[in-house]
Length: 102
Image (tube, rainbow, N blue to C red; front, side, top):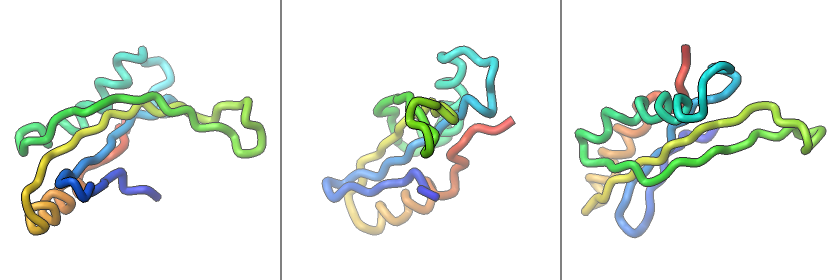
């Protein structure tokens, strides 16, 4: 499965966290983004910033009109100045929980 972590050659490390509708069926849309955002909140103290949010529909592979789940995703990113710093930040980002759970 995708780690949700990425390194850009331009000198940034980023990651995506999410909350899934199937785990929180009664929550409002804003609450779903808040759940995801809390997963990345510890990264803010390390110099990451929130760079975006997205709603991703997960379609049924056998029926594209049917939605299996919906993910509320929040992206975070940090500028790095060296390969060593990028490796340290990737390790940190990989250590984070990427999906909200009950």
